Image (tube, rainbow, N blue to C red; front, side):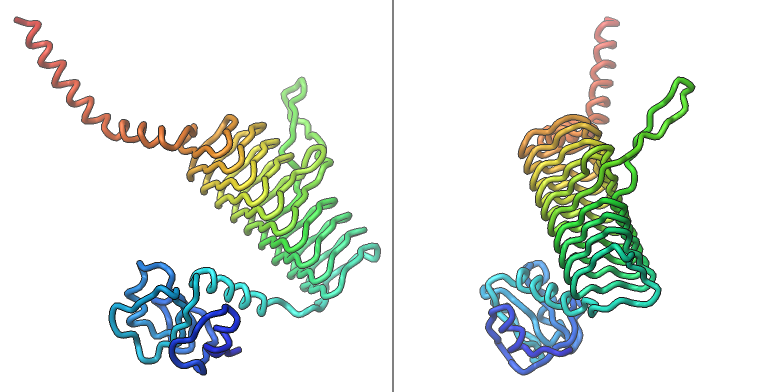
Length: 346
């Protein structure tokens, strides 16, 4: 589908500088632009590319002033915030790619389940007993939805994901391929022989509205009660969240993060990649945790953490600076020791 500069400007409330009739049918980074594509320039770091891009249209900030001639084939759309407007167009484009409502062959809906209007159910997908699926839900091929599950309207579940029994998925959530929601928590107790006895995990997982779960991430069901991911939380790929964990609203965590059981993570927390959180600790609101950090104790609101074991990021940087200087300090100490030995000989 093609859109003209004039149409795009109407969508993002921008002003056309150039040919309002020029059309595009693809999106591209400004340095990789080709004829018929739409790009954007928000970061001055990339300004050099706008003078040689082959894109047909580029979204720029109203404050942008070219330092040299732009390509004759390039039309600008000027807006207050180029990055935000391009993100809006990406969302618009993504909406256009959604599957049309239909139920594909070899899929299964249990007779006790209820599904809303506008369902897309991909081939070989399964919806179990007493499950309730809201309106405009997309369940892609090879997805398994267990019994007694609730899925809110507008949610999208991509191929190969699994939602175990009794879990509750809110509205407008996105669950990517390979994710597993509601597998058993890691609950075992050794008996008198030292053998591990499994503790039944009879709770569930609750995803509130607008939660994103990345590919191949796993969220374990609670032993009792619920593992809860609050509204607007964003979970990257390959994240493991243990049983009875609570993740606060608008918290985001990057890939390969692991959170052990019963830990409580506050609101608006940012967690870098490969972070490990021990069990039964509390992470306050607004905390920032640098990549590859390991935390084993509670963290107060607004703290920045770094290192393994992690501590205040400012203190960590000071300590690391001292650590890097350690070889020179040891060399100087050796020189001083040698001089002291020479003096004591006399």
